[in-house]
Length: 347
Image (cartoon, rainbow, N blue to C red; front, top):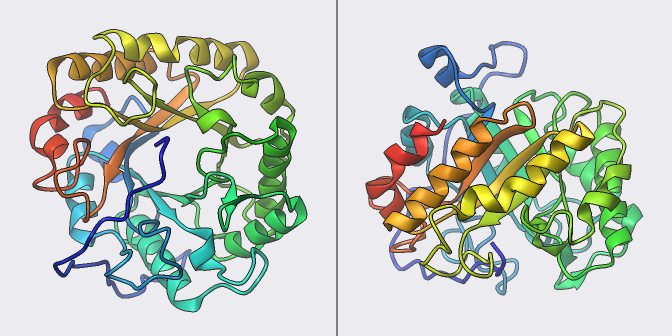
């Protein structure tokens, strides 16, 4: 989303993910259980952002289960049971590496991330997107240390280098930054991830200007991001798209029933013209007829263009959203209770 997550109070205890370590990679098969069950699916990646480990960004390092938490295993089970096969896991770079981007990782926070990813990928056979949810910033300042950012990613990716069901997201929603710096940071992330030995997994690159699909061309992302190179040739361009008046995802009203398809049209054409692949890493709309029609129109348009669109991830899930208008958290989230069949019908 356009705005940093609010600090949400956690007055009651939350059942956080706590699972035994799964068998080492190579001793079990990775697969898409939903595709197996249904025989086919429109998108390769379809799921939800499990937001909670990046909460409490103004309280660093923060206390587990007070300022931040990790996703519930039961929620992942439920959403996977409905057909979702991809879970984006936002976290904070400052919690993972509290001294500097290149410092050793905080062992407890890294363990929480690894256990979450292992549960999604090993236990459930689904995909996990590793998402430093930092808006191109570290300690509130734009990241300008390109070499340090490469080292950060090389260190982090080494923990997941042999996991074929992991996708790496370079950083969430770069914004108000020098365009060439954003390109350089994305390239540094690619270089660091591949240097860590993670040579087969997709890398999701994000653009400037909140990586909006509707501004992909006008923001300069379309022209500048084309120069990114990957020795594994496995880049996916991640864009976000909200459907309210300013595209921020902070209003209940969507512009029109057709705004979803309209706002991704230019990005779809850019992907086709350039031969690139894309994913909508965040999208949402409130529980009303206009937004439902707009969301369905956007997903239907993407489903008609799966030669370029690999999937879409709803914002947001996670155990601490309460009555948040976009919550898809089982089983009380307003979107889970009212809109899930419509969303999954487009898969």
